[in-house]
Image (spheres, rainbow, N blue to C red):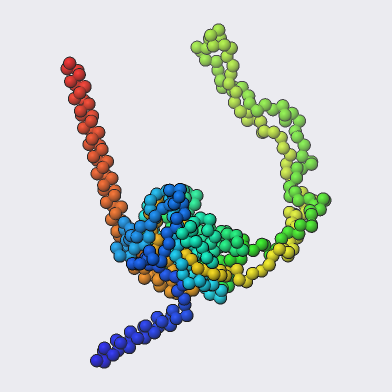
Length: 404
């Protein structure tokens, strides 16, 4: 009885501690795509009339850590994909905003997006698409060799502002977790697989606000301002006869070939070679300019158009989450979407979903690739055998022709 009582007490303490950790946090949206997910999401008709709308498959994918841990996967190729879900409207004022999700590009994505959007106010979910205004767009985007980055686009006063910093994304075919954190002090962080990849200031890493200081447009460079650091040496003169030195001279080692016939081959002329005495067009020496005043810079003044906004981080009326993208090759699988103000919960959520399955998924992926390579090797060997058979048949036909 005492042992049982102790175990019960320990469990009670653990539950209390967990509750204490997350009691102050809010989970605004959480989606693991378990049974009933379709009732929470609306598939958009965007691009349907053009025959370019893609669909979604509820699956764990070709390789996974748990066959019951399913997400939604884009299908088929060369389509536009759009789907959204609604949650109770909220503002992140005075809160940390955390947007997190996992995505797996099973198709070895060569051109297409893998990002998610948060939207404010009311939208028509059935027509949600690329032109629908959004508040935040976040996630990986891959296209060819030039684009392999994480988008963080923030809407401010009706205009979308991309982050000015480069954040490389993951490009393999395994599941990865992307986390965006926006804090009330106007700082941010981007995590991939619970590891911080970029952090900084909303003021510095986006151009949402005009610059605080600008060059004084009313001040011009003085006419007598000399900003040439080096000048031609006025004392340096071109040597006499410099321009008479030819760039090429007749090769003194060349001799007329013995079999040269002037009547048939024409008059023989010795080839020319670069003249070692030729130094190129003459240029005077460069010297330090004694009148040099430095590079002129206009004085900086306060920008009259600048207006500070301590609530740069705030997104009011957040109400929808959506996936809207274009993919040449489909097969991206989205799962474990979370919107919260509790970063600790988000990190734990990532560990409890992606984290517990990543090793098993990697093992299954490696086995899948191994089978593919073995199958390809067998196909190549079969092709070689077919080629040998064709060559043998061809030889027999040629031999029979010879006998005839």
